[in-house]
Length: 262
Ligand code: PGA
Image (cartoon, rainbow, N blue to C red; front, side, top):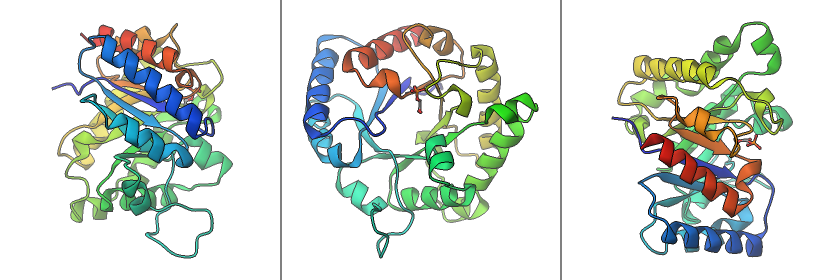
C-alpha cells in the first residue's frame, strides 16, 4: 500500500521562536479550514524553536510531526555545541533529518558519521529522515546510483538490522536530494527521480526487508514543479527548503501534492 503523501519543511537556519510560532499558528489555521486528505506533515525548525513548535503542533488532532535538522550520535558528554537524540525526544521530536548534503559538505559529515547518527536516532525511538544525493560530478560521470548505493549501504548496516533497529523501516523517510538541485532552481526530470526511487526501494527491500519507507524528492521544489513530481507513483512526497519558509507557500505545496495523489 502506498504511504500517505509526506511533506517536510526544512527551515534550515531560519526563524527564531516568535517567527516560528507565528508560522505554525497560521499553518494550523489553514489546515483547520481546509479538508485535506490524510497526509504526513513534518516541520523541522532550528533547535531553539523546537519546543515552541512542539507545543503548537500538539493542539488539535492534526497530523503535524516535529523533526530536528541534526543530532549528535553520542548520548551525552563533552561535545560543546552538540545536541543528543535524548534531548530531541524530550523536546517533542519524532523525526530527525540525517545526512543532509549541507551537513555532509559544509560540516564534513562522512557516511560513517551518518551511520552513527542513524543508530542514535533509532535507539532513542525516533524516526530518521535519511537524505542521500549525488553531486553534479557524480551525475556527469554517470555515477549517480553508485553514489546513492554507497550512501545507503554505509547507513543501513547489518548490525542495525541485528539489533532490531530497522523493524519499523516502513515508518522512516528516505529523501533523495541531488546536491546540485538544492537551492539552485534546477531539478532532475521527474522520470529520472521516479527511476531512482524505484532503485532505492528495491535496495531497501533486498537489504532491510520489513517494508518500504516513504521515498521523497528534495531540491528546488516549488509550486511550479510539485505536480510533475507528485504524479510519479514512487515519489511519496517532498522535502522542501526555501519554499517551506512561507506557511502560505508550504501549505499550497501540500494542497497541490495531496490533490495529485488522490
Ligand atoms: P531547497 O532545499 O528546497 O531550498 O532546494 C531542499 C533541502 O535542502 O532539503
